[in-house]
Length: 234
Ligand SMILES: [Zn+2]
Ligand SMILES: [Zn+2]
Image 1 (cartoon, rainbow, N blue to C red):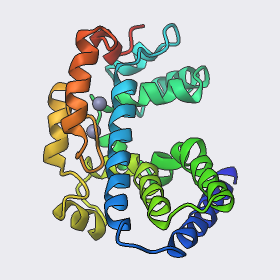
Image 2 (cartoon, rainbow, N blue to C red):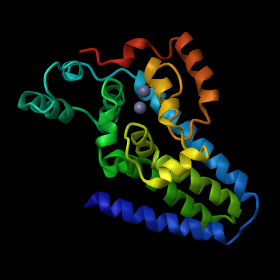
Image 3 (cartoon, rainbow, N blue to C red):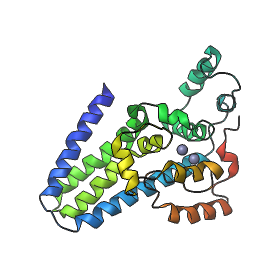
């Protein structure tokens, strides 16, 4: 119920922002839209990088879940899973989710869209969209700036959905069309991440990977990100 309310509020708030942008159309909107799309890609990569390497919470059995040898459908696993998750806060759950994605990538593609993007909407998209509404009411923001932020919001909101489409064969036509024109990356390009877990963290268009890859190498060299964080440690 709360989630439906958040989605409804986001749609209303987004339409209002679209209205604010439409009051002042200009050709500057084109580079602004591209910049917003780029920024959303970069955000997807930075969040992904930090979540992959941030150590998972210790002492709540996450290692046993991660390395569970039997069936994940079993009552034993399901019980362990519920018990562990109940002890995590939403951030810690997200950290575990990103790590768990590496050995079991297809699970993300099987999730419903709402499960993929629900937490992004509540924790990120809705607050930012409402702030943009407020800014438009207070200041005479140029239409191109509103359009750019709005496109950033669209890319950010659907980031985990886009990531899910990279791990699923059947996708809506629009996903394939966006891949063809380069607005979304291809599964082959994303596979480079899964092959090493040391590159190409951005999962929307992949445009920002050229910048984020050297950032990752520097962070790893300096010890800000350590390989021990990649898997739950017990
Ligand atoms: Zn990853
Ligand atoms: Zn993936």
